[in-house]
Image (cartoon, rainbow, N blue to C red; front, side, top):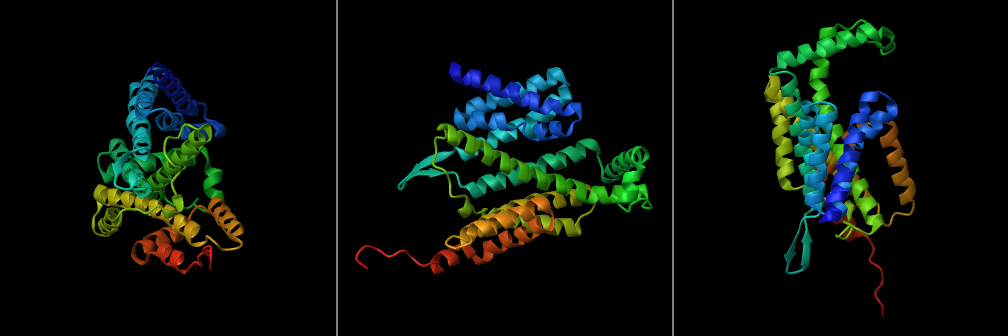
Length: 320
């Protein structure tokens, strides 16, 4: 118990430091800011979910004291507690007739998508109570940035665009992009924390086969509902639907990546193929993810992985 408390205290303070360093404004500070959940995840995965929960609360309280109560609240409910919850789900298990049954990775990924969408929508509502107010907020930000950086707008070919037009465009796409990036960063941090804990020998579960991760059917239904809502609704309701659709699309993009990993097994130049794919994703973070999302959605209907496994030659058994 004392060890867990010490780990939680240290992880919470480390997470708070990573979060508050963004106030320095440097590029490295932004990278460290995105890594703020990592100590909480490591504490929850390597010691116990209670240690992770305490670390999240310690980090939130520390940030509230150093920055402001509002910043502490935002971190606790927007970063700390979701990170603890994702780690808790990853370590969740139950006894079955076949042994220990671990919480499916696909459901963890779906939870990440739901949380990212919800936190983004709540954040937009907190910024402005209605859609007109949200556009006005973005317009103010655009005007301020244009006044201080006119050359950037000229280089982007947006020098002639009206600030209101840019604000409407930002209100249309910014929440969706934010939610999608949140899903990607949360999934990567959870994976990274699990790899660190596995290397330390403290991961008390077998490493899952990530290539077989499958989102639940409910996620497919939610994606369809979100896309439909984005098309027929307006105002903040449409913004919420677009945000949910984008978060779930990123989750399906990660499932699409898992599909490629699975169906490429046994393929000779597999390493070259995957290396090229990750290079493209790194250099062009946009359309390739949309293509992966389409593949991930199609997997739910056509089950490419099972077909590829069935078509793969089986190794000869002794005596053949």
